[in-house]
Length: 488
Ligand SMILES: Cc1cc2nc3c(=O)[nH]c(=O)nc-3n(C[C@H](O)[C@H](O)[C@H](O)COP(=O)(O)OP(=O)(O)OC[C@H]3O[C@@H](n4cnc5c(N)ncnc54)[C@H](O)[C@@H]3O)c2cc1C
Image (cartoon, rainbow, N blue to C red; front, side):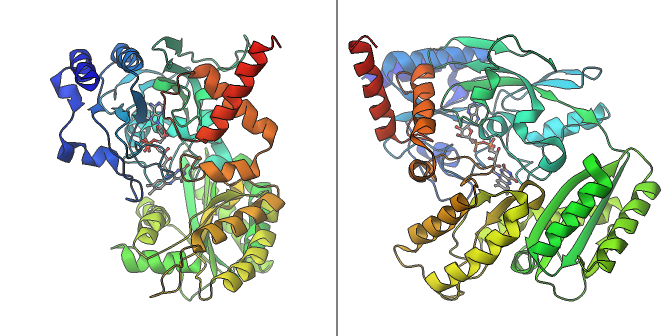
């Protein structure tokens, strides 16, 4: 009865075409990109405006319904799907997809949360600017999702992660109030910088409805090089050389293990290895600049020749056209898709200090081989940020044992922790890493996180059960209640 009244209320807010209740039509909204998370929901609600989002949140609050905010559903931690008990509606921002304005002289663009990243990048290009966030899911992920996961991608080494690309936010809070923080300011120290609380919060603290994002001058030249190297240690030496040679002109530095290339060439049509002869590791490097292609290319050639002389690389291909460069990037961006089809794997999105990446890889491989004989190393990622997608595959034709996943995760993440690293460099926590978080964060950190959640969302209606484990939240709520009762 209550649910029926809520549905009538929601239909009244978003209109008949703004709500999906048919099981078959809802399916795409309930399944994750990798098809490893599936949920159930009474409805998918698709508002068209901030006012509608606010009203939907108020209505849900009134009827005790929980909400999963959703963008392009490319998240990989199970954070954008509902649980399987139909206790949450999905609130899709997909119809809030307008670019509200572009302020070229201020280098900012105001966009709604449902704008697809590729659209934002295209609009920036029309204004002779770039929006530098770039990741494999660029054609499907939405800026609200990017901000809520604080997405990284391939250009972090130069432009930082999404956090550094956001100047302002508009957010609907858990009680339906709207915070208009759409300021396009470069400097604003007037109190706490609240936007940062919502960036990377995975929809647990508020619903982002719009953002002011930062634009940058379009580079006049972009040189992409694909390099063969003997080891991560040599790749690190090359990285140090490239940073010294190019400073902030170094816009990408990706480390790729041989198996990633082999699998991608096998699985993705039109992709081939541009470097003759096998190599255990490769680097995809991009240097961008305001000088002509010829000048930037000359500088890259000079640096690469020095790297060959120093033994840091053994072979190099420099893209000679935009088309070749795009092919190299297609290969890099297709690795995740190719990996998806290669059988059982153990996925990790880790970071350690960049200088420690080779040591980490040296130490983890023998430990894993001892644990799971025949395991195949499948590592790629953003070496420039110390961030690896460390996704080993089980031996071909083998089956994982019931405890393998947990054993591998503990082994990898314990070593990451010993290196002072993070168990989630850019993908977030969601459901995937929620319970592990407790092992790797201090009590004080966990208490602050739970305290923030309770402050912003006391009824726990926004993406409940994601990021923070329910027991942790209940414990912190009890501490606060006790402390208030005792008058502390
Ligand atoms: C092929 C591929 C490559 C990828 N490469 C990278 C990469 O290089 N770097 C990287 O960081 N990630 C990468 N990802 C992961 C993913 O693309 C990012 O996490 C992306 O930012 C998610 O955006 P989305 O719109 O799909 O969000 P969704 O998956 O829909 O949601 C992600 C989270 O954000 C919340 N959310 C969504 N919209 C809002 C909103 N408006 N307000 C509040 N909360 C909201 C959801 O509740 C959920 O918690 C990749 C994924 C794929 C499939």
